[in-house]
Length: 169
Length: 148
Image (tube, rainbow over all chains, first blue to last red; front, side, top):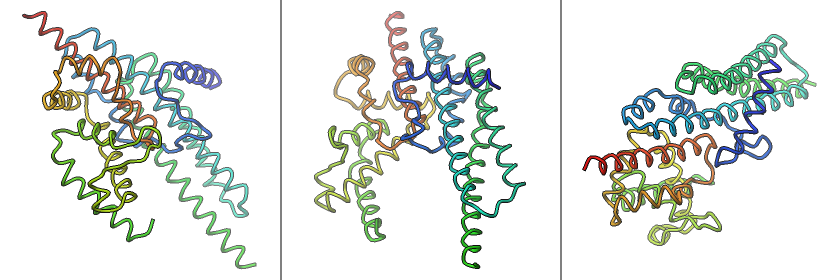
């Protein structure tokens, strides 16, 4: 896991040189997840099929490079959004007096699973290319969306519970 | 934003769609046109006709929404669809396709067509796809020159 995380940081540093738009800024940047339909587009096999049909080695080379960079940008953005969601959740739960341990444990497991998938995706994109990891990326996109929704719902429930508790006292 | 203002922005948006955008032949040209209504320094949008029919503020909001919407639509296109968009754009332009292709590959003017508030990964996908679509056009052009 430590090895994967180190690799992820190295790729992030490398990407900041290679991309022409700044990477997702964890402090001031867009905190949202990329819409899942775009994940499907980034990892799409259809574009690869179209490009290979052009029979131009230069275009194929450019496609491989471009898609690899975009895919890595997507993974880093997803990972940063997950971290932000978890930080926000930790902040909310610290102030709460009525926590459900089982729900909290499930959310932490969900978070750890997503981080591991993102790190795995970084390695897979670099070694096999984005078009070969489409299913895993689509799964990660759906899972991170569910994670964001679950955290949002939990935050609302926690706030409502706390409000009810303070009103009762 | 109040409900009344939202309704006015929606009306301005529909008016703009009907009077201006529908007359532009493809989404790529629509995006370039919408980006050109944005001030380089302030990032605010302006369109004389729309501002006179509504208010400058409402017109700016409607243009901003239209810009973001077209951008998201284009970014979701497959490469094949984007190559076709480029063909329609080249055909509808008074300048020659070869000249536009050269300028676009060199200066990448489409970079300033990205709206301000967009998802970074989507923006990067758009830039990458346009770059690829241009490379495909260049490769086809080179091939046809070799075949002659």
